[in-house]
Image (cartoon, rainbow, N blue to C red; front, side, top):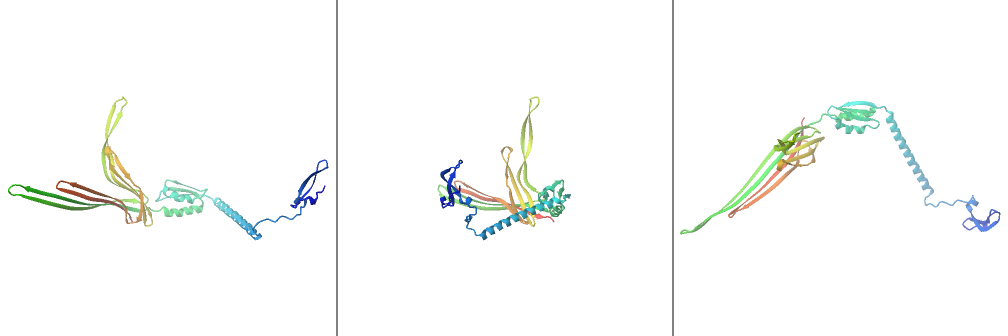
Length: 331
């Protein structure tokens, strides 16, 4: 049974009576889509704000990006294949002036997989391609050079200034036939200055630490109680020596005519009961070879005033201590 086109709504569907399985018609209408009944119906145009030229341009851009990604991937695969295709050569590079620990951090990044690099005593064992071995030899020619000899000088400048002022009055009173009063007023003002300088020197190779220490060893009595196998108790008395004073550890590194210094100063003072009070600092300074570089200093001011019945005394002083360091190359 054919549906009645007139029964269709304006939306493009066709309505008609439904037929039951026994062939009788149902009063209920059915709606068949016009697109199904008429396959040749025109398509609804796409609602888009982009023109055909824009859509074509976007499609071309996507294609170019995909082609570029494929090209880069092929280039990477070709590079890896070339590296793996080259045979690996085992070479032992003998070091003359540097240690394996000094050159290994520089050489290791130059060896790509599957190559390997390691150290044995003063020898660098490298398994890599011939081109990589040539690059390593060129690097070692510059790294494995004789270390420069350096002379490190540490200078301590000490200055002190003091001033003392005193006032005093003396007098006498005479009673009797001859009466009189006498007063003697005295004023004293004194100043003093002192300066001292001490220089300590030590030779060291470039990249190696140097230690300069000044002070004294103080004896400290020690007592230890020991229990013997038979249960007896013995007291052992010994003498231990504690280092007090100041020390300066310097690690010089050169960059052309510039020097970089890692400084570790330490000062120890004796304390109660044989203890030692230690103060440590860590810093880094830089300068030119042959120049004095100031590390720091200490300034201490003091003031004392005393008063009596007929006078007074005042003292004021200042002490300054500064430390300098200089690095020179020994040619």
